[in-house]
Length: 313
Ligand SMILES: Cc1ncc(C[n+]2csc(CCOP(=O)(O)OP(=O)(O)O)c2C)c(N)n1
Ligand code: SF4
Ligand SMILES: [Mg+2]
Image (cartoon, rainbow, N blue to C red; front, side):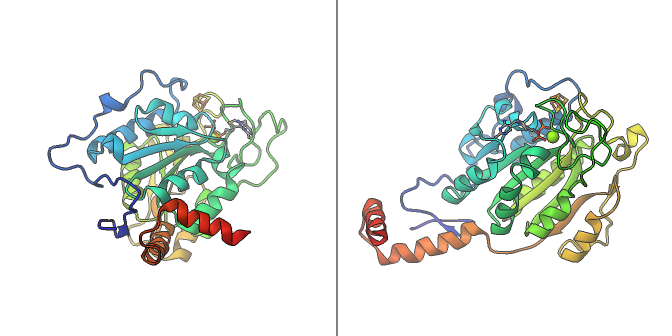
C-alpha cells in the first residue's frame, strides 16, 4: 500500500497506472479512437456528443489505460461501439451498476457512462437513484431525446404530455419526470444540463463532470431526427429558440436554488445547477480496505475470502 491516487490508497493486488500520462507519453487523438462509421441516422444529435467526447479525450491527453466508456442499450447506448478504446455495451438500464464496479475496483480510471432517457430513467431508474446517492465516482452523460428511439418511437419517461407514440396513440397521458430534479433529489453531487447543438457547452459540461470527485450527471438534450424531430427547437437559437445559461449569480452549492432552477419551464437553463463536495463511495471503501488490510498483513486474498465464507456458515 505505497501509492495513493487522488487520495485513495492503491490496492496491493492491482497494477496502478499513473492518473496523468508522463511527459513522454502522447495522449490519444480522435483519429486513433474514432470507429469507422457510427450507425446513427444522419442528423442525430448523438453525433455531436461523440465528437465532443473525442475532443475531451484528446484535450486531456488520455491514454487507453486511463479511461473506459460504458453504456446500456439504446441508440445513444451504442456509443462505446464507436469509440476504439476500452468499454462495454451492457444490459438495458444496467450500465451504472456495471460501471460502479469498475470505478470501485479501479479508482485510477476515468469511468464514463453514456445512455438514453429510457435506459437512465425507466428501466435503469433505480440504479440512477442508488448510484447517485452512493456518490460513486464516475461521469454519466444521458442523451435525452424524449423518446425510445432504438425500438422505434415509444413514450419515454421524459416525453412531454400529449406526445404521440406507438404506446400512446392519442398522446402521452403520464407526467414526465424532470431529470435534473431527480438527480438533485437522489443526492448526485454534480448536476449539469446541456444541449448537443451547443458543442462548446457540451465539452465544458463533460469536462467539469469528469473533474468532479463524485457522481457527475450531465443531461444532454440530443434530438432524434427520426422519431422526435424538432423536439428541442425552443432551446436552439438557430431554430428561433433560446439558449439561456445558468444565471451568473446562481450558487451551485445551494441545493434548494438548484432544485428551483431545475423547475423552470422548457427550454429552461443550461450549465452547472448543483455541485457539492462529499466523500465518495470509492474513498470510503478504500478506507475500510486500508484498515482491514493492516489487520491481515501477510495473508493472501483467497485466505481472507475463505475466512469470510467460513464466518457465514
Ligand atoms: C431488458 C430489456 N427490455 C427492453 C429492451 C428493449 N429496448 C431496447 S432500447 C429501449 C429503449 C431505448 O430508449 P433510450 O434509452 O431512450 O435510448 P434511445 O434509443 O432513445 O437513444 C428498449 C425499451 C431491451 N433491450 N432490454
Ligand atoms: S433513431 Fe433517432 S436516436 Fe436513433 S440514431 Fe436515428 S436519429 Fe438518432
Ligand atoms: Mg431516448
